[in-house]
Image (cartoon, rainbow, N blue to C red; front, top):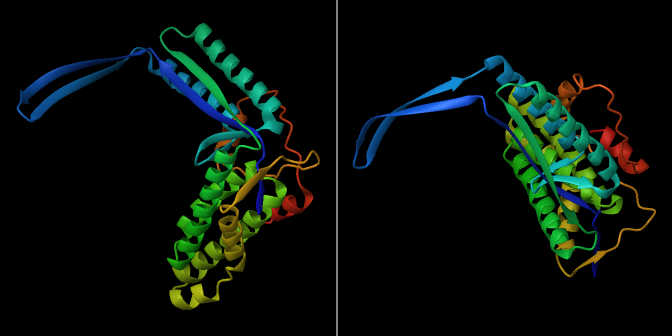
Length: 274
């Protein structure tokens, strides 16, 4: 019997837009069966204000997305981090309201919808297990094809998925990510930069951790039993691949003090090594 623990949380659906301040004039130039040609003129009432509106929209989105993991299923926030998400949503709305109060033409809107992910949700667990398995396969495929970018892309997504796994379930993923990172670095340095023989280099790359994780999640997909998360279980620290972008936005936002997730000691050390 294969047991799996899902960290409870929320699927966060985020909508943001800038409205007003732009008009379009379309003039039909030619039209016939199966063919049409037209000319569109775009007019921006206040280009400076419009640019500022887009910046506000970006900052508001960043406040919310940095409290979530950007998984292939969308933004996911752990239940433990919900208070921080509440604060971020409030700050994002305030940011938009302050801009809208002084703007003449443009309006910035941001909306957040949350869907609950229960820790004993078997459907969600199976979807997550399947996605993690696919990402591990993508890492393996990237190694075989000597493609460091493909490896790193799969690694980034796997890191984000780990945010909603219990510490026990995430250990194999963390080890696989570490092995994949080492493989990507080796391929980039020895094959792409130094021109060594790809077949020889790939044969020397250690993939045991990837195979262990692949088998572990393959086994989980059969006869799955989803268990409740123990009270003493602690979240896993996840590096955000978009953190550099978020940091840029944070410079312009004052008085933001967000409490970090509680970390599992063993996993924290492993993730920091990446």
